[in-house]
Length: 452
Image 1 (tube, rainbow, N blue to C red):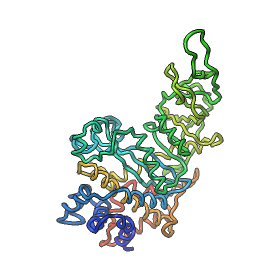
Image 2 (cartoon, rainbow, N blue to C red; image 1 turned 180 degrees about the vertical axis):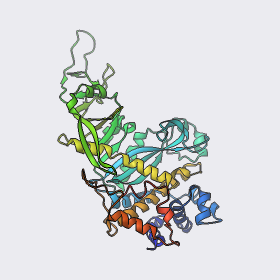
Image 3 (cartoon, rainbow, N blue to C red; image 1 turned 120 degrees about the horizontal axis):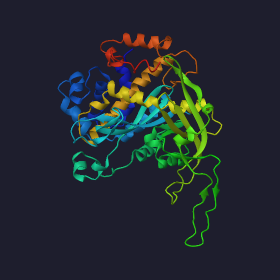
Image 4 (cartoon, rainbow, N blue to C red; image 1 turned 60 degrees about the vertical axis):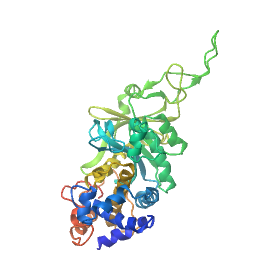
């Protein structure tokens, strides 16, 4: 198969949305450079491989050409939805750091770096990933701008930060991204996120306002009420202004204390999918509660909010807490599957960094960073397009994946689909854009095996 022609045809709709001939020339070369072999995916390194002697125009295409990412992002969301969208899909909200040296790259600051598990000098991108089964397609990467940047006008101007951009919490960026991808046609059944997002009551409320089902992490200190809590009229005092807030019939407790008070039999061993070493299992407990995120009380607490599931995952040395607004009759295994579905975005981040050079951009300005991030997402989407087509043996527009049933054989390392794809990869012709090293490098553990 002529993979060069395949890439050319697949990119054609994206090229149609660029403004001029020069941009339509350099975009395929840039994507080819991201897909190609080589440890570094910086502009100069890629230019040596795909356009010798043309590092300067390729650099200009990335960091100076004023092409808008919006039309290409819209098309990316449409293509991702064709591949993995639908009622069984999930939209995962997360963030991914890009480690940096110095202080001039846009948005770089000493902040928490999830990659290292501690604070470090890095940029942080809020990511939006559409996924189904174990196939992620990242459709949004937005730079989180720390307060120290947003308040330094000169620094922002030097890095080309648009005047319309201001400091926003990550959860607010995430809600804006959810609105954007939904307008572009992305369809999914549930929104997932870790405690960085789930701890924000405004984020959860925003999801409810949009009519979305969610399953998000929370802090163990988040207070909750029993589901049957009632509100009593405020007491009337002999003096002073009468109290206006009702009084909960019981006091709220932290999620950790609430779970600790439950009987031990509340925890059950459940399996949510098949893995490479057998069924994925864990100990979970779920109970209906009302989160203390309603109107603030004078005592410092909050009135009870809507009724949700409080879910606890018990591990050997820790416990993780989540809330989800799934229906009251939802089985525990379904809740666990939704919660554990979030990991797939981390797999996508790792693929984009280790194989496609997401964190190799050496340009410092806002435009270059978002151009590079978008082109990296497009490259990943193309790879997923190839894998799903080879896996399913179907025509374009028909690729879909499904989570394996509990106890089913794990297809990640065996089976006719996986073997057929590996055979195809190993027989790619040398003139092809997708050389064997491109699709399946020697150190690859994620790009191929995770799909099958």
